[in-house]
Length: 534
Image (tube, rainbow, N blue to C red):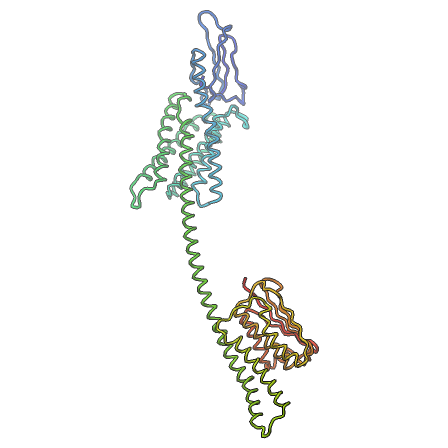
């Protein structure tokens, strides 16, 4: 027996052979459950024997009996196995496959919301799984009666059809906004009618809604054939043609099964049980191919983007290098101009005074005077070497260590400081954490020279401390402290007379640094803080 709608019992002559679990609401659902029995020899009589089948169902759902066959045990067992496979096993497999594919493409849609076709396909698969579960259910649980389960069955098919149409239109890039609104309106009205229809009208409402959405299903499949196969200037798209082939399979299978169901109930003769899993696999391949194509397109775009970024990075590096060279050249030019002023105002004046002293001396100069003059000339020589080392070199490089950077400064300054009786202490970091640029080294040297010059000229200090440190990898600090007479920093800055302080501040700003001067009687601190690029 292919099944009975919805429940029943079987007797041979007057003996009960089998009975459903429940013959009262909630009824057992045996309408898609093939069964077979061996007739007991003890229940058979000589002559005529009668098999009685009692069917219990809901009147609006047209209760009835499927195909009944009698035969030998081996023959009937084989037919039952075929019916079991087509009416139960394939449906179970289809439910699992639909849920798996639906979850997969739901995840894809969640990760890429722009791929709406994947979202509608996931929802379509879930609706189809719900529909099949109502077919496979052997009881109306969690509902209280059979009619409620049947309402869910029809509503699930309506939702499946709507999602099927929307998926088709999204996949085919069809803009049918008005038709979508009409479809949603009809679907909502149909679901409301199915769920709320009075018991006497349920049968008619179910048939109208079911047949109507089957026709919608067929119409959507047929219109997509025209959309996929019609000639276009840009050519037909392969994914659309593959989807059209899948939908043509649906049309053929659906037409066959509709005729079978409307003509008579032969559940084992329908094709949808077999075509469903096959079509789901094909659809998974079509959507997977589209996903792979999209990923390949993204990968090509990423490669092109990387190539363009690499080109832009190289161009930017060249531009920055040119800008750095230009800035370094400008800094050197400014330094040379400053050197010219220094030579004129410092070395030039000292030389002129020394020359005038020698020229105006009418008599032989005492040895002490000559030695004093030679000492002055040595100082001028050292100053001139400093100018040559730091100002005229066009191939200036960053010293390997802070110690090497400070060595020339320390050598020149300590000669004068020692002669003046000033005790100096130099605390220099042994290594660069992050080396400064060439421009920063040059500017920092000038700032420290000016600060030491101010100490020698104005401070009257007895102790001097020079410290270079890097509190972090991107910060460099130089601190010069003396115990001289000090001065009023704000008064000097306000009067506008401190050329040296303005020069140091300007130099520090040009090399991305800041200058800080603090002074009071007995302590003057000049600090320079540079920001380094890692």
